[in-house]
Image 1 (cartoon, rainbow, N blue to C red):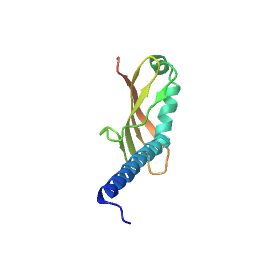
Image 2: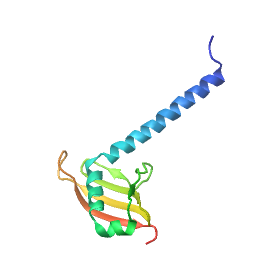
Image 3: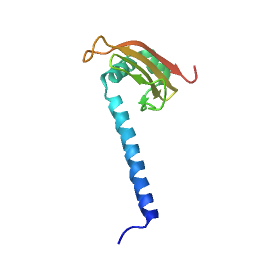
Image 4: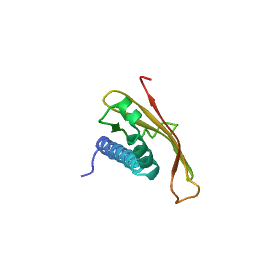
Amino acid sequence: MPLPLGKRVLFSSVVVSGSCALTYYLIQKAFSRASYYELVLEQLHSHPESLEALCTPLNIHYLHLTDKYNFVDIASTQLKIPVSGFKSEGHLYVNSSRDAPFQRWHPQDVFLNLKDG
C-alpha cells in the first residue's frame, strides 16, 4: 500500500533537513581539525594576556560557516573564531598563509577582539 503524498513529503523533508544539519556539522568539525586552526589555538593558549582577559575555562566555538569573513584558499586563510571564557567573550581573527600547497601554515595576523573591549 503506497504512502499518501503528504506523508511522503513530510518524510522526505525530515530526511533532507537531517542530512543538511549533519553535513554542516561535519564541515565545522573538518575546519576545527585543520592545522591552520590548531596552530592559532595553540598561540591563544600560550598567550597569558589573552587567557587573563578571557579567564579559564576557555571555550572555542565552531566557526559560523555563513560568515563572509571566513575564507580558506590553497595558500591563505582568513578566519573569525568565536571564543569565550568565564569573564568575557569575543572573536579571534586570524590571517594565515603558506608558501606552497602541502607546506606548513604560518599565522600572519592573530588578534583577539573582545565584546567588552
